[in-house]
Every structure is written in structure tokens, then in C-alpha cells.
Length: 358
Image 1 (cartoon, rainbow, N blue to C red):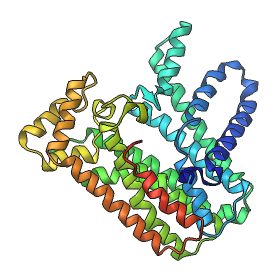
Image 2: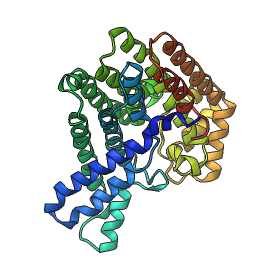
Image 3: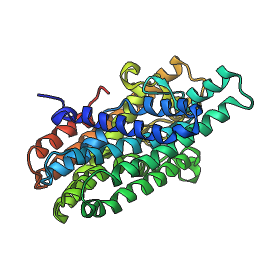
């Protein structure tokens, strides 16, 4: 059996739509000259990878609501991958990340271009500006893909409010994440509840719930089925991000595409971190406070933080939460009225989204 993300050859079809769309946009920018080529190449490199998870939830939301396989829904689903690219480009700038999917982050890549050419001014500032503009381009392009998918005007109008809500709430979630990194515990920061709120609006909704709802709305799903989609999608989206946070600390860099402990160097206030504060001893919390967010964190420091997360029970608590959320998602799917083959694929996507490997 194929991987659930490859049923109906979906990943390769989405990739083809994205490639064609980037070619179209490159042609529109061609009159501006060759200076834009490196920027477009950085975008193309970023969108060439990824699981296509968000496109899959849109597509299977459509199929599970009775929509037939067609090129138009693949086109609409691809918009979610361009939107994710925008989020990643901006996120890497805000986090000052060095890498993305095992390659230099776009702002680092563009800064290197500046240095290689010996241009005037500050290379890092140029790289940051270029990456922000690349993200802005992707925000525009995702709307273009969605609006011109070839689906009926009526279908797009039904789904448009949710598509727009997704984009608005993600930006709000990004701000909550930025704020969470600076809010001290004495002011109420660093709690599990606050970390989960960030997850909900920065990741869970745009990764699973909203793409699924958009697919269902495009197909004309009933209010009851849409409610079931939310009950399935929101806990699964949270579990997916929790798994990503665990892999960011304990995962294999060859699979995650990020250096070991990168999230720890960035000082990410994840649920894992909040659970150490909630469950740990004074000595364990002291280790956390002394090492988390240190840019020069070495492998020994990474190991010390991992040990604290294991010994305090934080890792076990997060693993239990992932299992509970995945179970909630499975229960909601059972009563969703989802049609085949969508029902089977959506069920298999629960395991794919929460896998312990990548």
C-alpha cells in the first residue's frame, strides 16, 4: 500500500502544480531583469521539499465530502503549500534559523549571495529583507493559486472565508509565539496552557483543521461533517506540532533537516519546556534556565537539557498528550460521515502526522 500522502499520486501532482505556478510567476517577473533570479531560486528550493501534508488534508477533505478526483482540487490544495512556504520564510527570519530542511535558510542564503558578490552594506540585513519579500511573494501567490484553481465561483466563495481566516489567525499565532519567547515566568509566561495556545494558532489550525475544512467547503460538506472535521483536525494538528517539537530536541538531524538541539539554541518555549518547569525539581529548572536559548549551546549542553526533559517526566507527559490527541482525532473521524476512500486515508494520516521518526 502507498504511503497515505502518496495515494492518488497526490504529492507528485501537487509538486507539478507548484512548479508550473513558479514558472508562471518567473515569467511575470522577467521584465524586472535577472537580479530577481536568486530570490526566485531560493523560493523554488524551499517549496521543492516537504511532505505536502496541508495539501493532502485539503484534498482528502474534498474527497471525504464526496468530491471526485480532479485537477482543480489538486490546484486548490497546492495553495496551502505556497502559504506554508510564506510562513516558513518569515518564521526562519524571526527565529534567526540557520537551516531549513538541511539547507541554508533563505535569509542565510541571500546574505551569502551578498558577501560572495562583495556588495555594499550589511549582508545579513540584505538577507533578512530578501527573505521577508520572498515570504510576501508566497502570500500573494497562494491566493492566486486558490482563486484560480478552476473550481466553480460558488465553491471558492463558500471556502474563501475559512481560507482567509486561516491566514489571519496564523499571523496572530506567529505574534503569540514571538511574545512567548520574551514573556518572563514572573509575568505569566512559560506555562503549558500558553504554549498550547501558540501551537493551536501557529500550527494546528493551518496544518490540519483549516485545509480540511476548506476541502470540505469546496465540496459542499454539511455543517455536521464540517464540525466533525474540526473535531478531527484540531487535536491532530496539535499532536502533529507536539511531535515536531519532540523531534526538534530528540530527532535525528538526517531526518529532521535541522541540527541537533537547534530548537534549544533558539530558546523555543515549547510544551516540552513548559512541562519541565511544571514538573521539574529546582535543580532541573536551574539547568533549563542556564542553557535554554544559548546560541553557543554545545552537544554536552544539548544532552543536559535532554536529560532534564526525560528525568523530569516532561517527555513522557508530551508523549502521552500526543497519544490522547491522536485518539480524540480518531474518535471524531468515526462519526464524521466521511466517504471512502477519504475515510481510510484520513485515518492513516493520523499515524503519519504523529510518527516518531520524521
